[in-house]
Amino acid sequence: MSGRERVAKAVERTGDGGSGAAGVGLTLLAAAIAAVLVLPLLWLVVDAAGLGTRAFELAVDPRTIEVLVRSVALVAIVTGASIVIGVPLAVLTVQGEIPFPRFWTVLIALPLAVPSYLGAFAFVSAFGPQGELVGFLEPLGVDALPSVYGFAGAAFVLTLYTYPYVFLTTRASLLSMDGSLVEAARTLNSGRWEAFRRITLPQILPGIAAGALLVALYALADFGTPNIMRVEVFTQFIYARYNAFARDYAALLSLQLLTVTAIILAIESRIGVDESGAYESGGDRGTADLELGAWRYPALLLPIAIALLAIVLPIAIFWMWLNTGGPGYQVGRLSFDWEYGFNSAYVALLAAAVSILVALPIAIGSATTDSRIATLADRAPYVGYATPGIVLAIALLSFSLDVLPQIYKTVPLLIFAYVVRFMPQAIGSIRTSTLQVDQKLVEAARTLGRSRLNAFRSVTLPLILPGVAAGAALVFLTTMKELPATLMLRPLGFETLVTYIWRVEEAGLYGQAAVPALVLVAISGLSMAVMLAQDGR
Image (tube, rainbow, N blue to C red):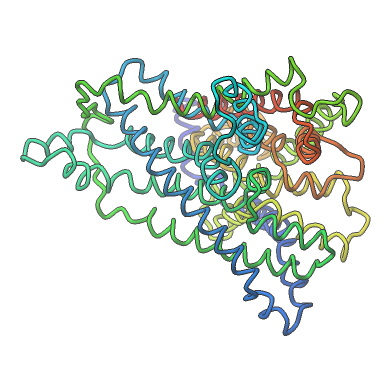
């Protein structure tokens, strides 16, 4: 019997590498880590319970309901507008016969490379009172422009920077669908719209729902954009109550916001799992089926207009500030220091390293075992990912004050918040890579005398290293941009790029934000590059 045959026989005898005491231990470890990550959120219930009978009265207070309704309305409008923009653009780039489709795909996705609060910053500087555009149009007799502030302005800016979520997920669904089914429907005398409604839409609906979920969660949790656009939403309402030392009231409001988040997740899950109308076949994927004719080039005006508003405008404003100082620029007052950039990179590196260490057992346990505990441990951290940053920050502040005052507003607490918020990015990336590893290679190493740890280090780890690196990069890059958690949890005197931008915006010193704003845009661009590299298309 050859050596290869002996290895194969040994693999058959040993069975699944995830079974046995080691598999159980890995699963329990993953479950314990997930529990630690989710536990602080329960402290909101402890704080809110201190209100006693006043809790219900405050929860239904007219002022609370007014702000909550406004926030939900903003989420609904931004999500609906993102679907209206994102879905047609996805169809255009996948099924439309347009020139250079790859270029337009990247261009349409690029608004994700600009944090929405920076986009709001640029819009206020350009279109606000005394803005750059007003100064440019003054010689033409235009003294004022419609106000950019308020609900409409916030909805417009948020839509501009979140619709790519819908675009990317819908595009992925279109690329994976069987285009021959649409052609078959057309040959049966179905019109273009009827074929889309009966064949295409049921297949891409889960993708649309997934993108809409991301948009809704982002709009609900956003803190910086509504503040800059001067519209009070629930995240600001919570922040103001906490700063007014009404900690128990802020906890109650946070629970209300989490309830809205849960409702959004429930709605998306109902849509996302409904695949009764989906079809699967081995035909051509993403077949070009949209004959634009004379509209071929006019259809490109939409992505061009979006690119000018969402990408060119902010970068031009920041570059102008860098060269001319910008409005409110004062040398020596709130001057930028590169130490802020170092602080941002320092905590982001720590967050990425800890996230990888914590994510490894969870992701590997989920990928190699099918127990319910492993599945629960894999899903539980996503609670933190769906939790608004302002809510997580308040939960951690309350928990640290009551249980571990030594870590209150320290770097370790800040790192923990980043891990809770962004570790699911690392889990997803590592789990995907682990699922692609042939377990027979691991078992072959075990039959040759390697311990489980040595087999992981010599076989599994090299194979999943690209996924580990991609997960770490995503955690690092998203940590650099996180505003509310950084603003509330950072140690006293610890400035980062985002907290400095926040300070100069509040002081009206827009020109001072040029360097950190451009740095954050560049970092976000790297984040987009990592996402596109993982996409494989």
